[in-house]
Image (cartoon, rainbow, N blue to C red; front, side, top):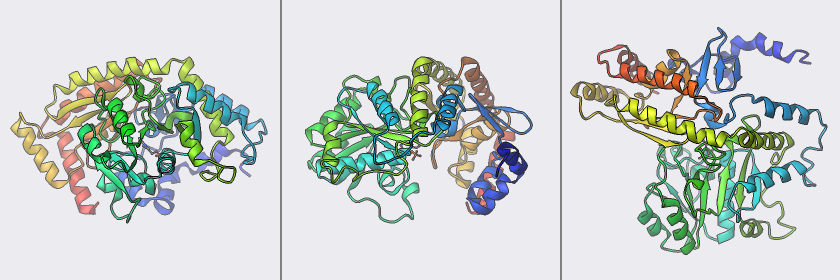
Length: 463
Ligand SMILES: Cc1ncc(COP(=O)(O)O)c(C=O)c1O
């Protein structure tokens, strides 16, 4: 048996990329090595990661948004240790767990009154699947409206409401009756709802792939249109929930918004245990589970497991006690306004946008510099999506800041700092951005040489 499990991991540390190359996803390993992201991190704590040489990195990717409390938060870890030692009657299934009851009560306390029932899932995409099924069951309709550029997960139901062709291609026919409309377009929504045959409209209050935020008044009007047409409003807060945007839930930035279904996941367990939830109205839950016979007609094996629930209770308490929602609001404003100032000095930057600690920088072909426009065109002829690497790669390799482009075929780089981030950490990031954006304007220059080589390598590899 693994007497010293940590020593066992250390013994095998050097084999991680080879193991992934052989047994997991070689294309992913190739991508990491091509852009120099194969850092072999050995430790994660708070806002930081460390490599084997002891270098400290600022993590603004936070595991795609799960480490809202930073990595390995001591209070959550403490609760998990207690839970592991408790010999708890976990997952009895034919019983009701105290822990999930307590998490449900806490979740509901942060939401409008009508949203008082919870279904626990194991991921964001499962929350979305659940929401789609609940909407279809409640309304006895099939059609789902979603937004262009939306991201709601990658299982087949969630994929059917994904707003990017790239993710859907080559996976065959998906859920029937889904229809995209442009984001932030109320007339398009009204038109899509006109037949009174729509089960639900699903929307992210801030799009993960573009960092575009819903306009003021959009959600309240979308809700009115949905109600008028007998459709449900599903708000996907998988990425934007739990304080990330400076409110407990992003839709709470606007008055009078009371969705029918809210999907959450990511930060709920502080990144320790996979977990998600759907919070909805009693009438919707009751229409699905409307008899003893149907009381588990929608269910999952690992839902409500004790470790996930204990981590969720602890994480929700940390968010509240450490005033992380307020921190996200305050430091999000600081970071975004400073980044916008820095962005104004770079002709490639069109916009800095987002909400709280979920924000992005958008790049486009420059209009006011012929030299930079020619460089942009040359690069885009080689490869459409590689420009962002000119920012992301030096951020990591020169400034030790971990980020990623927001999505395939976008020119947006998104930043998801942990909610415990400090002003000093953000200053580290802002100084780095200043330097990286200045380098991007030097044509010819080292940054352009690197990214052109990268584009050529990608083309040669046929990737
Ligand atoms: C808004 C939104 N919904 C759903 C998902 C899917 O979540 P998961 O990756 O946990 O399945 C994501 C993931 O990034 C997301 O951002």
